[in-house]
Image 1: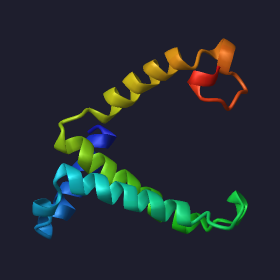
Image 2 (image 1 turned 60 degrees about the vertical axis):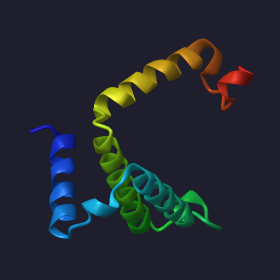
Image 3 (image 1 turned 120 degrees about the vertical axis):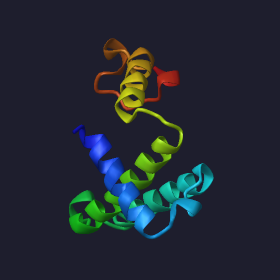
Length: 109
């Protein structure tokens, strides 16, 4: 079984056992994703990357992935496909010759 499908099925089982599907509309999943991303940032607040609690980072990153996978599923997006498509677009915006070793936005290259 493909990993993404296995993850999504496990998320559905967890959600459905608790009757939470009623709360998982796209808007609220997007809001939850943003909130969890903020909690991930909080793990780094006032610390260097090395000082961040890696267990907290792992936990919050899992929450971010959870809501991202559930949101993708709501729109019937193929996660692998949309990531690869975005990477193609990014390759066009950030050609190696202009962007290698440079931390500028594509509009500034």
